[in-house]
Amino acid sequence: MDRHTQHSWALGLMVCCLCSALAVTRSPAQEVATVEALSVRWWGQACFTIGDGTTTVLTDPFPADFGYHTPSLEPQVVLVSHEHRDHNAVETVPGKPVVVRGVGPHEAAGISFRGVAAFHDAEHGAKRGPDTIFVWEMAGLKLAHLGDLGHLLTDGQAAAIGPPVDVLMIPVGGYYTIDAAQAVQVAEQLQAHVILPMHVRTAAMSRLPIAPVDDFLKALPAGWEVQRPTAPTVTLSRADLPATGRRVIALPYQ
Image (cartoon, rainbow, N blue to C red; front, side, top):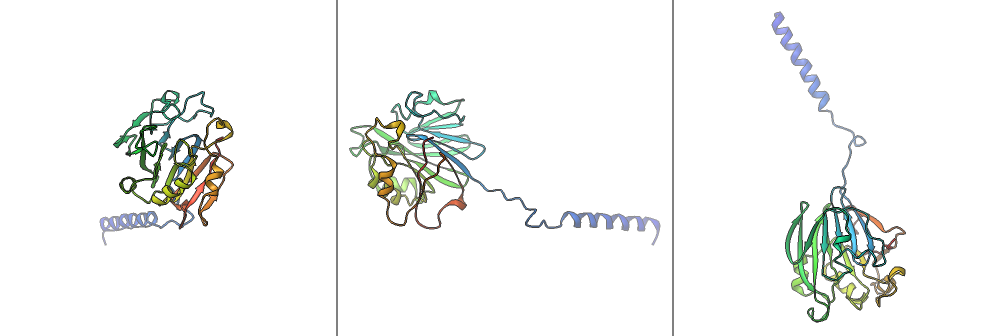
């Protein structure tokens, strides 16, 4: 072959070898898997922060003098389930978050939220007014925060929330909200995988006539898994969901 043909052939061989080297499949040890996960912290009452590493959602903020430590994280979104002071103190939240209230679809920080109409009591709001249940997805998990739900869900409300729910934040303390036995029924209605009890009496909230979380744990059906972490934060991903049944994670408030 002439010199031009030899040069072209050699150049082609070099390109082919380079492409083959780049196409070598990485070993499993070299693969870096990205697992979506949420960090969930309970601050007391119905206040949680839920973050995926990019966006943080805060629920139902309470006043600075309420009795619990106010959240130090700076959220992008604040959800307000109803207009009682221990749930709507948005002035205490650091930063400039988008505040979401009310029934219907909402968009904030790239997340779609759905507000489902409910009541703060079993008399269609006659005693304590309306309550909004918020439903949304983060890190591949479906979350629902029930606010101060005061009744069992109707079939229409359960359908609007859309079971199964991966992570359910539910009041269990009674008096102002559903009690322990009713909370079990609501968790079953929503086919909840992970249940985070809230709105319970603690050492910081002994003045309220609500029950401690232990009353809820005693009311659980046989076979429900219970976890009691020593820290107020839990990390959750799809891999952490129970394969069957319900898992209750009773977080401490501090």
